[in-house]
Length: 123
Length: 220
Image (cartoon, rainbow over all chains, first blue to last red):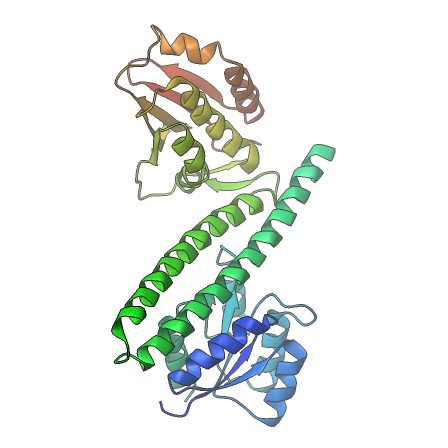
């Protein structure tokens, strides 16, 4: 799936910029949003192939952002990132329409695999 | 009631902090990953410093994984304060206590493990007090066992009660009657109090070298 474009959403700047750089080295085009509001603005003007969304952010939480994305663009795949040891938030997110979820710190190969699966599933 | 609020507050703050720790570890992990990616791009240049850098990065990655495991268990422990009474899987709980008590085991030069079990054993109880009771039992044995001793935790269902066994093994204990030593210690009184509040009971089984904790299916 060449030329995939992914929007990374997290309030931890160092995390998203580094992850973005690593994805770019693997041929995945990335955009970065430092919070929920910024993510929704980007999606309005430039729809990505998938969104990687942190659950716990100040302001709009990841689950709030997920609900808004799914209301406007139900087919846009969203993968959630959670920093919690448990799986409750990930499961809650999947009930709200997320394609999948991953625990932080993540494995980049697993993220790419899940992105491909999610984008394929949305086609 | 005030005590419960204090425990819940402590748990909430700790859970929040473990979330932050995971964020820190995530940034370290991605930064290491990026350095590895860059090293891959210069694979054919100056192999010796590259190999040394790769080795250092893999050590950092291993410590990140260790930190993640610690933060995960600490987060679960903190969340055990969310509800004063809740469903608890005894098998998962003893694994959790074993993980959290490992540092104390290392300091006492004692091997501590949970016997692997496949099926969950769920009871409805007070999670914090339950963990405290199991931890107190382990601590009793830390005080008893010499260097090189072993402690193994297991969970099972016996008739209508649920049992946690804390078994010890040592070359030589240096005491005539371990049961008496355990049951006359200060921690034993504390353990009894915790067990009473859990509507359970504690005992020592000489023949199998075990402290046995019995819990009802439901505290209510």
